[in-house]
Amino acid sequence: MARRRGAAAKRDTGPMEPFKRITVKQAKTMLDKGDSVVVDVRQLDEWRAGHAKGAIHIPVDDVLSRIDELPADKNLLFICAVGVRSALACEMAAAMGRPPERLFNIEQGTPTWIEQKLPTSYNDDP
Image (cartoon, rainbow, N blue to C red):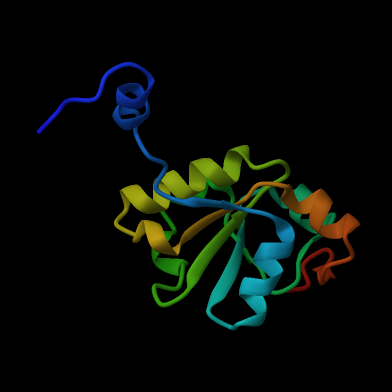
């Protein structure tokens, strides 16, 4: 078997993310199919200011200790404000044994979700 050299070899050596990056519109399409749930990992004050309707709220610092609250039979669409904390939550879920093909990071974040007039709840409403 021939070894790759140069740029091709470097592309193959980096770790793969255990999740897929998606847009808010892709997330909405997945939710409409009924086999996905949004998991909002922002802090409580951020959550109360507006969140995806029907989302589960688990702050990123609590993901590891509350992993059992996440449905095992659905795609998990993690969201925060800009995609950093949600990517970390995806990594945590993968480390806790959740299959990477069920983990998604909504990169654009909740402000974009709200700006695009996707279903939104406020305060403690689900």
